[in-house]
Length: 179
Ligand SMILES: [Zn+2]
Image (cartoon, rainbow, N blue to C red; front, side, top):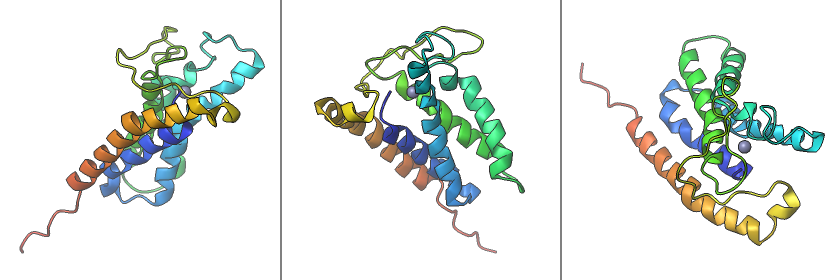
């Protein structure tokens, strides 16, 4: 997996594309949490869940179906009233689904079960430039961790910042038309 920071960065970078919705800041943080949540499945590694199982690491919680279901559960909780629920679902879905896409771009680890629970296959993207992040905090503070941060800065943070800047520009408020 990439580090938790990078998953959150991608979710936050999606924000400007939805800024016209005028949501409160807590919704962007909810998106960042959604982007990190799929890795809750690492508890399975310590609980003895087989790695290739649908409940194993990069299994069901990394699937598009999980992203759709999580967004569907959270949307009415976060936006109790008002319009824009479809847009919020879309944002939360993309934030969650981005996790699996980043994982599938790492140079190590098992493939991602994008289509679980309908297909147990594990998939990687053909282009995998991101150095895989170690599991566990202690190993992260090492030369390996530095290599991870350097590769994520190049392949995740920089493109995310560029996307956010372009989206911010594209969604700037229109000039008021003359009456
Ligand atoms: Zn992951």
